[in-house]
Image (cartoon, rainbow, N blue to C red; front, side, top):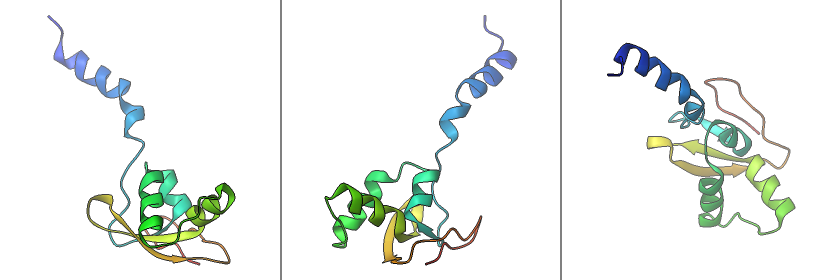
Length: 100
């Protein structure tokens, strides 16, 4: 019989790397590059940029648009496009809005 006191900590340690991705914080504005750092937002960002007419299929433009667009976080990690920072998007710091 497997001892639960040993099994639970062992499983927690084994799967600890899977918990790195997380959702954004509701109400905060994020640069695209910060969303990519905190979770699996690549496809979500692309779909949101396409939905709002701000997408380019050019790979270089795609990266610039993704990194320098700002999104507001909604319920359950959903995002909505806010604007594009033509001068670059800046990290506002932990718990604060990113800004242009």
